Length: 171
Image 1 (cartoon, rainbow, N blue to C red):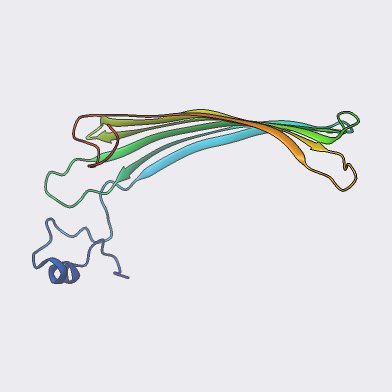
Image 2 (cartoon, one colour):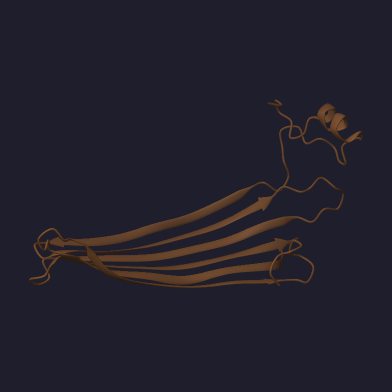
């Protein structure tokens, strides 16, 4: 390691042939602070017929991206929010043909903003859900198996100022 230094002056000069573009920060790297807060809550019920439960979680983050070292480089920060809800129910022996039936559902909502000098430069969102229903059959002689149905829907979106996304990124 490089004790106490964010960049080793001698290694940088050897690799690039030039001096550091800014003063070495000895023990400090600008714009790397962050904070986060979040939580999760859930419940479940278990009985002779089966079980059912649900949960919800949310997390909010704010953190900095270290500058590239050039003079006047913009200050870049990320503001992120992630929410998720899930549920699962399972029924034991739901009739004469099946061992159990299971239903699962999940919903997600993700948003992150890239700030440049505290102005929104890009917004990324991903919202969606997925669900699954399964019937597990009772053994029929040598046969056993499951029958199921699954759905998924996601909507990913990026809104950014012109020229701010990397080359080749979807417009």
